[in-house]
Length: 299
Ligand SMILES: [Zn+2]
Image (cartoon, rainbow, N blue to C red; front, top):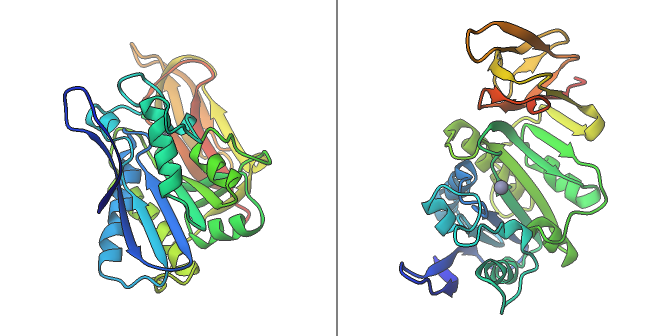
């Protein structure tokens, strides 16, 4: 493990950006997690890949950054704690800027690779089935599919904001992808293992490690193929499914009831066959908040 960047902090130990590198030569891959300090599934998935690479001989270079926002992680916070800035909105960064801008600059420099992946978890109030989620086509779409993650979501839009890491990598001419899986603030080792398997699948596709077999993609969808259910009113949402469940039209996804007294306010049912890809984890909802996303399955 090497420290590729360091900033003194006022009272505690210095901030250090850690990178683990395996192998040498091309192709090269960089995988980043923990830009958001409370996204623990992403951190765990990259650490699982570290363990696997320790006993393999990669044919190419793999740079791993398991946890960028260490100070945020200390405090279970998504953002950088001192000024509440989002590192993933600070790219391409500035070597003489604020702490967050300097970290962004150093990370972008240190993660210069042919293929780059940024791994996140969902927000603390939702659980996400592991998915590649980005505007993508051509080689990037091929790489996304090679991961064998449960969902490939071709988000609309030709480009990503260059203030985010994936957008900044793309501005620099890199193939770059964004993965989301699990729920913020919590660890789900089943979902972390799926994410780690997807990252291994990508390395195998690039010929860096032997293939261990990839997971099964349950849905490969454009935005129009995703059915989004939002709360019709405020209440207490009780889900009747788990992420990864396959549902048919009419399947009861969950119901809303009053938080006090438990009177049923309404039901949420699937409109068509699909896989539950996002599910509300915190049951207290306001009107129009996200409850469930179902990705259409044609097979
Ligand atoms: Zn995140």
